[in-house]
Image 1 (cartoon, rainbow, N blue to C red):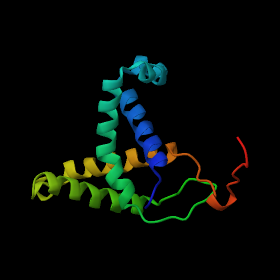
Image 2 (image 1 turned 135 degrees about the horizontal axis):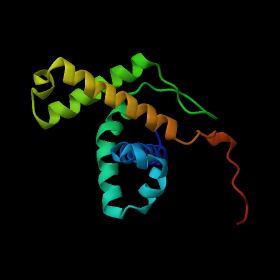
Image 3 (image 1 turned 135 degrees about the vertical axis):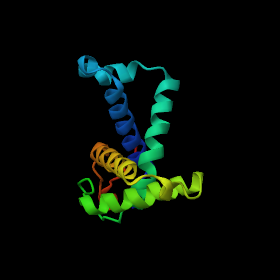
Image 4 (image 1 turned 120 degrees about the horizontal axis):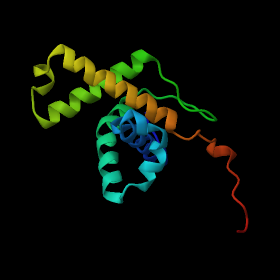
Length: 140
């Protein structure tokens, strides 16, 4: 699917926030957003890079959905198919034969993680606006 740069940026940031919250101890997860905002730029960048490696290939492998005024919705089968093809491509690009060498159980965990993080990314995206309904003011 074709997403705008802003949509993908917001999606990666939402996943990075979720990853940061997941790595915190359970008794400190309540203030995860505040803690994420307090991170230095380098640590936030590393979280975003990790999130982008998983989510961006899956987002681009999703089928096209013409949605205006809402977030795109995908079925579980569509998410699983996109996650499998994207994860396979990334792993094969890094090391040929790596996907087939993964045990089935680990492959299933990789796919489940990619699907769940993609759901977080899509849910974190802003609502799409109708470009034809955009009104540009004559003066600022």
